[in-house]
Amino acid sequence: MQSKISEVKEQFEKELSQTDLSDEQAVENLRLKYLGKKGLLTDLLKGMGTLSAEEKPLFGKLVNELKAEVTDAIENAKEKASEAAMGKKLIASRLDISLPGEGYKHGSTHPLYDIREEVIDFFANMGFHVDLGRDIETDWYNFEALNTPKDHPSRDMQDTFYLSQNAMLRTHTSGTQIHYMEAHKPPIRMVALGHVFRVDADATHAPMFQQCEGLVVDETITFAQLKGMMALFAKKFFGENAKTRFRPSFFPFTEPSAELDVSCVFCDGKGCRRCKGTGWMEIGGCGSVDPAVFENVSIDSEKYTGFAFGFGLDRIAMLRHHIPEISLLTSNDQRFLEQF
Ligand SMILES: [Zn+2]
Image (cartoon, rainbow, N blue to C red; front, side):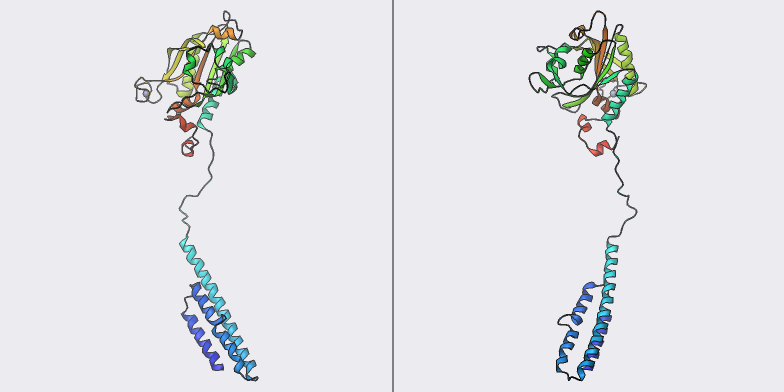
């Protein structure tokens, strides 16, 4: 029987030396072959039943010694196999330290917000009061008080989001000026700023955009002062070389009225595709306050004169940053916003 033990021992040592120690499955197969329920060492112990009482203790001792030896060897081999497997895994998923890190994304202010802050700064520095007004106006403040009665054709120019017959999302910030003139006596210097809403959508028009409208009222206000202020505004927002041009126009609440053009920011006034060859781009409207508006808010139109002007902040941002589509400003696309 003892020769049987030596035989198994030799066989195990031979097989162990032939086993690929980097292969976890091969090591496990070896363990099962010797230490498993039907393993060779288990068989040896089962064979003890045929031995005499004197032989049993010595045989048991030898088998157990071999079992301990095999267990140790297998444990050892398993450790090596597991290390080798880990090594293989690391090689397969090796880090490329030349790749750029993931980094942290930093937010930035929105281009429209920047323009709005600049506009507020510009007018606040000249002593203007800034009023955000309200998004919802009544017919009186949005139209009627601004010399735009119900049958007035200019109501067709602004297709309006009505909330009821008498309430609407404001189509311009001009209503804020009426509220302001009701609450304050001249001299008045104020800008109304905020979102306005119109049923309108194409590349350069959106159903919601931001407007900035100014109003100056005093005893000696002239159209020449309006021109001076607009020229200053154009230089501040479009560069020192920006020129302004006033084209006669019509608004119900100003008389005379003018469209305000600034020399094209793309071609410096030479004429290009974007300005349709004219060298000019429209940025807003302006004019002297119509006396009828003063009468609606009980300001003496014989004593006081004033001027008013309005710009789309979106349009200024688009011209400043050469943005082709107004919808980009509100689409919240990071690829667009990261450029500012
Ligand atoms: Zn141009």
